[in-house]
Length: 223
Image (cartoon, rainbow, N blue to C red; front, top):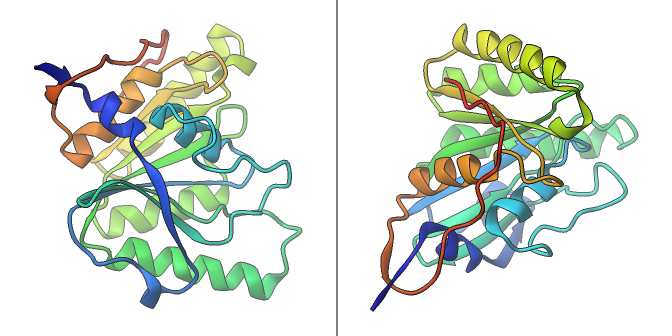
């Protein structure tokens, strides 16, 4: 029998439920990895690319549309979780407060959460909301892997300067934080990001079939 790669297992992710309140969360078991970030940072595109499933998380042309916690199950014990986007000013303040409370409750209480993938636009990293989320995760000892998305929009030297600046900011907060360059468009850093997610989920190659994904270039993974 042939081996099923972690990438092939990630491709099996399918939408199962949306959650508007903490009480609606699925049973707290197994392992899950959450995707967080500012509403226009490319969070859904990153999740789709890592899962190799173009339509998995809906990519909206209107930032701030994702207002629920969306669950995508790989199997009964492994899930990818799309958290509400934050920081979009045009959303009503009471609605924004509601989903930010949901986000905070999830990050604080969820035992099956093994890591957070935080997507930041490479051109505008470390917004106030990004930093607040990093501080929150550090306080509760949550590992975070930052994807500096849309890295193809910057020249090489600017990408490297941003990467190093963010790396220093993360190191000052927690030794469980890491960072890399990423682009869903050019697939830069895609394999590295998948490796982090698969490791957190505990996905190991198993017997059956299929192949790993393409390797991105110039990702510059740093802890």
